[in-house]
Picture: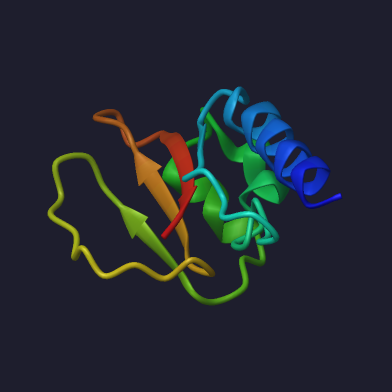
Length: 95
């Protein structure tokens, strides 16, 4: 039974990771594959930064502009919203 759960978790992570603009770290067996709920915001990919004003994004989350340095502290529940060089939302990730 434990092997089935591990396989299922890996398949779910692969399915989510194949979504454009979504970046996930492979989950540990038995853990939540999307702890920051990034999949709920996939509709923002390709939108300008201003589109975030219309959203209610639960804390913690951070905006990462193109070329901006970010801390390496990891928080699986934090949603990272990464902008491209044109200021459009390019990527969502947990961490």
